[in-house]
Length: 159
Image (cartoon, rainbow, N blue to C red; front, top):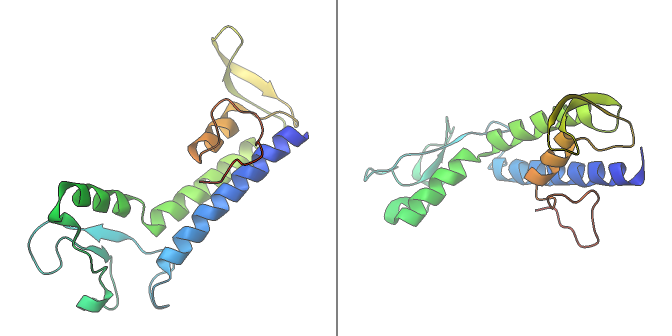
């Protein structure tokens, strides 16, 4: 594989690893929780409503809840819903799925659909070991890699 393809794959691996590490840190509450907990959020006025909670928390008393009440404003409500959709179990599941895609498409010769130079979909485009296929390019873009760029530039950050 050429430096260009290796650079994109290395950048993407770094981006996936950063997401995994953040999810694992968020999951490491007290050591007795599941390794990748799910989080829940319930809007309302009850004692646990408006807070982000760990699903099946072994310590359900008030001190184990994320203390902030998120449902005081629409902004807070929408942020809480977003946080819950990106709980540790969801992030780790996405990272594992992305690594499976890289296993199929990264750094090896294969065929996959791609748009040709005329903009038509070619259902059997051949990609060689030194080429980065559209699946890898789009996957990298989903992690913040600049669209249309074929290799990392100095200063490109994993976001």
